Amino acid sequence: MPHEYPWTMAFYHVESMAPSMRQLARTLLLRKKTHKIKSNKDINQQQEVLDSNDPAPTHNFTFRDTDHFKSLIERLPPEITFVNISLDEENVLWMTRCHSSIEPVIIRLSKLERDDPMLAKMSEILESSDLSVRKSMNIPQESDEKNENGESKILDNEIERDKEHLHIKLPEKKSTEQDLQKAKAFWGERKRLDEQLKVFIGDLQHKWLGAAAPLLLPPAVDLQDNERVVTRLMGLGVFSIPTLTLLLQLYHYISENEWIRLSKLLRDNETQSNRDIAHTTMSRIAQIIKQGSIKSSRKCYTLLVVPPQLSHLPWECLPIFEQSPYVMRLPSFHIFEYLCTLEQEIKELPKMVNGRKSFYVLNPSGDLSNTQKRITDFVGQFNWPGLVGEVPTRDQIRLALTESELFLYIGHGSGGRYWRSTVRETYCNAVSILMGCSSIKIYDEGPGFDGRSSLYEYLIARCPCVVGCLWMVTDGEIDSFQHNTGQETQNNIKTESIKLFTEAIVKARLSCKLPYLTGASVVAYGLPVAAAMDALLKLNV
Image (cartoon, rainbow, N blue to C red; front, top):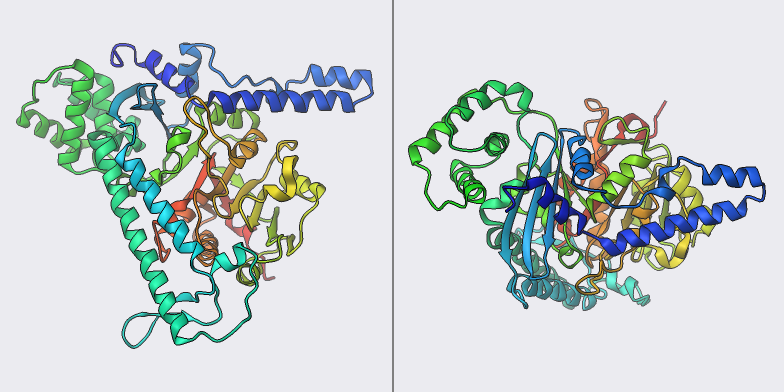
């Protein structure tokens, strides 16, 4: 049972994730090492490569045994909580929560039906969204300004993304009344779908996670500041020490009713007992925590792993994450350990990024004229080198990824059509922001496979963090999101020396016209990163 062998059960659940992607990583890294050896004609240099301590070529992306896995979890910074969502061969959904301070918690969540209604609903919403985008050629953009009737104005000089996406050139003309009615209908449909997605996300948490939802969150307290409280709770003898610790860590995030539901779930998971805990006992425990515990003020992160067939779901927008919204995705915990091994200079998280060392590629296809205008105005605030309206050479991309610390792509998809295998042949130093439709979507290839995605190549190339889109959105919407992210990264420059990228994404998501249909599409994979503010902006001196 999970409660009897928590580390062993956690090890097997975590080790089962992304086996095909990890094999791809082993293959590509070995190929890089072989190429490096062959390119060195000097025998001594070849031997140096073979004897190299560089962890990249020799990393095997597996854990030797339970003790090895346990040692890695116990070395995690206290700000990091790792949550692994897995789907077994019987379609049962499991959650494995790991933190350096306590034993893992393994919860059986729910059994998904063959044609699960939640997955069917998500597919329906995305299909309707795609259809609305594809039907929307030459529809003017909606403004944030209101007319005399309190309705959003329609901007004449904005055109809909799909005209550009399909490379269709239409003559510029002033919007007619018919155009404005089409725009009103279009944005009405987009807002209706946005509301549907919001409801869906709430249902997803309720139906799939239930009382276990708070386990997605990192601790709200530091144990060293609350040792006296833990000692008092142990004296009650109701829960094991790991469970008491977990209940203490999560108390400040949730309502008392949610906390009691979680307490009962953990007790049932621990003892397999159906006996209810006396209400007075639970109230006593809650009172001790409320009066004696000290809530931490530091920002904490959830590292979230989900299976490829569930990766299109907007997990970051679950209602429970409103309490602690800093979420980084990973294909597996092996990738996190791999990135941390390679980043030897990292002493703590988040990883710092120097915004001065940036490079951007904007509209390489040359057919996104409105996006080009909007984003050119945005990047004009920074002293970044970049390319506008032209396809970069492979050498330019290789140099951008290896020498820069931030790489920004704005165009169709992930940009892979332009630089092909360059990413997989490179050791990527740059945090990569890929602002194109479905840029980091994982295309499901069925049970037992990890799907296809450009995301994998960036992470295997040791990219510290990849930000991109899970599904199709309009150019105007995603351009606005990119602008809002940049603005959030700039805010409070006089009072803050760094800004979390994940924090900027969260705030940009909330400020979107469509916070779910557009905002929830943007997610981040990899390590938590932050930008040095004084290095990001041009200094006007």
